[in-house]
Amino acid sequence: APASKLLADAPYAEHLTAAIGELHAARLPPADDARWRRAVVEHVNSIAARLWRGAQVRMFGSSASGLHTRGADLDLCLLPPRPPHINAARRMISSIGVELEAQGMLEVLPLPSARVPIVKFVDRASRLQCDICVNNLLALNNTALLGAYARADGRVRPLVATVKYWAAQRKVNEPYRGTLSSYAYVLLMIGYLQTTDPPVVPSLQQLGRLDGVERIVDGYDVWFCDDPGAHGWSGSANTQSIGELLLGFFARYATEFDDAKHVVSVRLGRMLERAGKVWGEQQTAAARKGRRADRHLFCIEDPFEITHDLGRVMDTTSLGWTRAEFSRAHALMQARAPLAEVCAAWSDA
Ligand code: CTP
Ligand code: MG
Image (cartoon, rainbow, N blue to C red; front, side, top):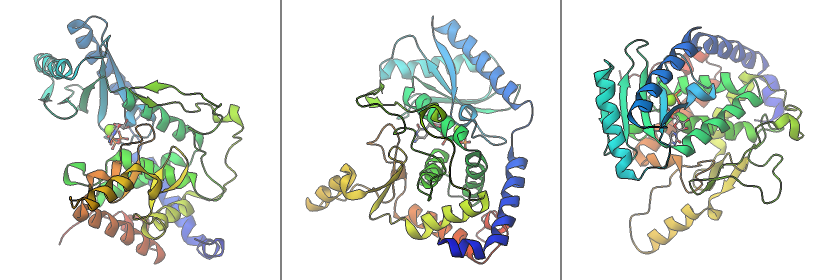
């Protein structure tokens, strides 16, 4: 929105800023949360080390990036000493499932045949909902990247907490129903914060990168700048409040981002033109051959696995729901609705 508009909206933006602060504080994990999470990691680590010599268990996802809120699940990754073939990974999931059951874990559900084999369970002591996957090195690395963004500017955490809460309340954070994952919403927020004027956060994959430097993991370059302060980023010149930024986030995705033309790219820190992306070409090629075009309706590039579009879970129906929710939030904010109303629980009544 133009600066004049934001100025006119100042009291409303101030209200939003206060409300986001309260929501973030209320959604912060309890004081002993980190201890509980570490205890589960230790326990599962000891089980894994007993089953496979040299195996380790690591935490990833929001518990490890610092972008978690109260009650977030615990994402765990089993790292065998050597990268396993997919069938070995499936067997590991089954074996650890048996052992978790024997240790009295609750609701143990091994899904060894899933595209990404995982076992789900609820830790008996902490009641934390946990998932274990095998050797997901890209996820460990993208978690570290998100953690670096969370530390890069103090506004990232409250804004991410608010958008995750809004998406969950509005039922547009249900990947099994074709809406975006929490991870995708985090990328949408970072992508927005990189493209405000001036930016709130830089692209950590570009900042301080020396020519030819890369770090290849599973075939993708996962290099990023872990210490922006040491590479010429002396904090953001953007002085907008979190309220103004939340307004801008919804304006961006409700009105400015054209999903037919743009791709969200946290890697480059700017909106890409779809035309330059292989997805656009694939789609055109498929259409030419008269095949149903592959569904890249709203493109969010994974920062490392750049051939992966996180928006691909959406079909026209779930994209319709998601777009409607962005528009609703934007319209309510234009009408200066309280944050509680913007984030009101969805109901079909
Ligand atoms: N992940 C990924 N690719 C996806 C989805 C998830 O690599 N398509 C990885 C990311 O490392 C992400 C982690 O899995 O950080 C957990 O994903 P998710 O639960 O969606 O995100 P969280 O930030 O953990 O969200 P929440 O707090 O809601 O658990
Ligand atoms: Mg998670």
